[in-house]
Amino acid sequence: MNVHLDCQEDLVRACHDIVRVFYPEAIFAAAPEGADFSVRLEPRIDEGLVVVEGALLPARGGERLAFTASDERYPGEARHNAQKRVAKLAVKALLERYTIREAGPWGILTGIRPTKIVHRMLDQDWPGERLELFLHKSYALSAEKSHLLREVAELQRSFLHTGEEAGKFVSVYIGIPFCPTRCVYCSFPAYGLERYRAWVEPFVAALLEEIQGVGRVLKELGLEVETIYIGGGTPTSLPVDKLGQILQAVDEWLKTPGTWEFTVEAGRPDTINAEVLGLMRGHGVSRLSINPQSMNPQTLKAIGRAHSPGDVVRAMGLARNLGFTNINMDLIIGLPGEGLEEIRQTLEQIRVLAPENITVHTLAIKRASSLKEQRGDYTLAEAGEVSGMLNLTYNEAREAGMRPYYLYRQKQMLGHLENVGFAKPGYECVYNIQMMEERQTILGLGGGSGSKWVNPAGWSLEASYNPKDPRNYFERVEELIGRKVEKLRALSCR
Ligand code: SF4
Image 1 (cartoon, rainbow, N blue to C red):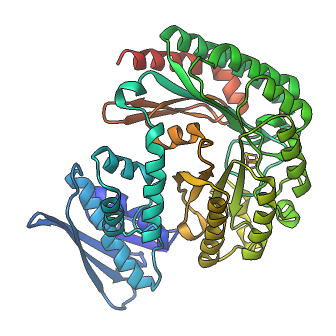
Image 2 (cartoon, protein in one colour; image 1 turned 180 degrees about the vertical axis):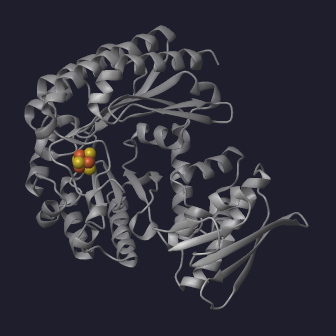
Image 3 (cartoon, rainbow, N blue to C red; image 1 turned 30 degrees about the vertical axis):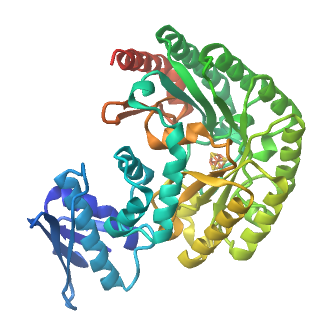
């Protein structure tokens, strides 16, 4: 679908994502010639209200559609941001009429971190009910999603630092970009161990160097490392001696007296055994992630995971026996061939395993995944069914005594829905909250990891990334350390 947006440049860019809610593969044309339809937007201010007049003109005849959206600016909202928001409301209304489809429960909120908007309101002491009404009216969110956002953001408040405290804390993410096999939906840095085994040794050597180089400066500057998260990839797919060296270096260089949480993603249950678990216990890992995604053997096979539901049960039993008391399980809703019945069966088995956290993902068809390339080979549920499966899972988590504590969205998710982390009270993953809400500096070490440098004055943010490719990483590690050290020193001078 070729779409032409006729309006000022900043509005054009703001409206791309709302067009993609209706046409995920939309191509944006610079001129109306050759486009399937053109949308014209004219913003103005009228008696204090932000008004955008919109018109949709189909290229091959057909009815011209018109819609005028208007709203007030909310306290602290810049005029250009209000114009973008109201322009999106106009485009949404026009496309709903043109396609005879609804945008879905998230309305015009197309960003990855919708809770950030809510935190800005809560910073200004907005009462919760007004906030929900505002999201419903000014972002066209469903009442249900407005309430969910409020619930998540209110739970997070006690974990967020004040501007003054934020400068004293950081969190550390360590990326291990290796996996036993590649899942069909994966777009993460995940190099198959069979093929890339020769890179493991130089990768780990470089990572130890980076942990030491950055850790030395953290100690020198007296910064507290609040949380540590080793993800990937699958960290537990590394040879056990290599994983041991990394955990040892974390103990020595990264942990501080204020380190509150240490998570390792043991995502693939087939990489877990008593030796690996014992090693992690010995190094104070406080939170594990063992990820079934589904407990349906056919699904696991179809998505390229080389483990069985039995491996999940076995890994969970071993972890409990070794004393792990905070375990997360990731589930994906909308996997190929799955519907309500398959989710029900998965949830019944998860209930027995009784994890402290469940992270519920909606399947996203990401550009770098083989699912995207071979989409025609898979049967995927329709938006309505995906929403039903998601609700079933949320109800199950709530019945298990969990509360939603972090939420994010991705592009190309089935039904334009969301990912939500649920946790029993006291078991919320603080790293997930800090990383998502962007009110704490996150140092990304290892392969493909991102660092976020937060300035508490206004919560502005700068991001930098380590290379995804392990070879590129280990060849450039000294330069990467140098840059991080420089930024850390600058951060502590603020
Ligand atoms: S386990 Fe995770 S990182 Fe590894 S291939 Fe699967 S989705 Fe990607």
